[in-house]
Image (cartoon, rainbow, N blue to C red; front, side, top):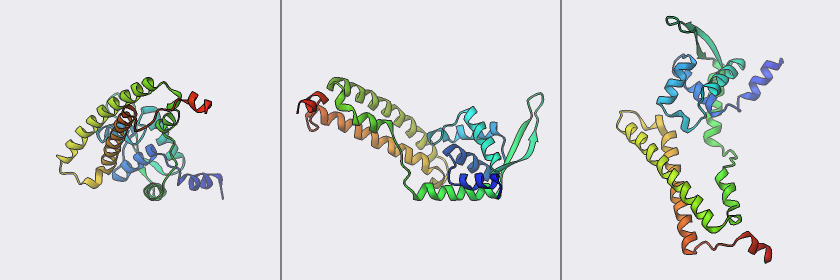
Amino acid sequence: MNNQSQVTREDDVKLTPLAMAVLELLLEQPMHPYEMAQVMRARHVEARANVKPGSLYHAVERLETHGFIEVVDTQREGRRPERTVYGVTEAGRDAFIARAKAMVGSIAPEYPEFAVGLSALNELDREDALAELRTRALKLQAEAAAEQVIVDSLIAKPLPALYWLDLRFTAARREFELAWTNQLIEDIITGRVDWVPAECEDEA
C-alpha cells in the first residue's frame, strides 16, 4: 500500500467545511476556482465555511492532491490568465457522502469562545460584564436581521427548503443566542443570577 492511498483514506473523514462546499459545487458541474468563489458568495456559504481566496485555492489544491477532484478542462478568455476547470472524482464523491453522513449523524466537539468567556464572567466587573453582553446582543441582532433578509429572499424564490437548510439552521441558532444573551442580561440586572465576584469566592 503506497503513502498516497494511506493519506487519501485517512482524509476521507477529515474534509473541512470549505472542502465539502467545493465538492458540493463540483457534484453539480465542473467549475474553476473563480466560479466557485462567485457561486459560494451568491449562496452565502460564508455562513458555514471560511471562504477566502487563499483558503479556497488551498482547499482545491488539497482535494486534487488526495484524488478527490481532477482537472477536466482549461479555459482562457482574452488576455486573462488560463483558468483550470475541476471535476469531482468517484473517490471524491464517496468521501463527500461519507463525510456528510458523519457531519449529520455525529456530535463533533466544538469549543466556542463565548462559552469560555462566560466561564470567566465573574472575573469581570459587573458593569463591564453587562456592557460587553449588551454589545454582543447588538451585534447578534444586526447579524440576525441580515440573515433574516437572506432567508426571506429564499422563501420568495421557488427553491426547495431542502437546498438551504444550512441557512435556516444558522439563522435559528443566531436567534436563539440573541434571546439567550438578552435573558442573561435581564437575569443579572434583576438578580435572578446572583453576581458573585471572584474575590468573594476567594474570601469564602
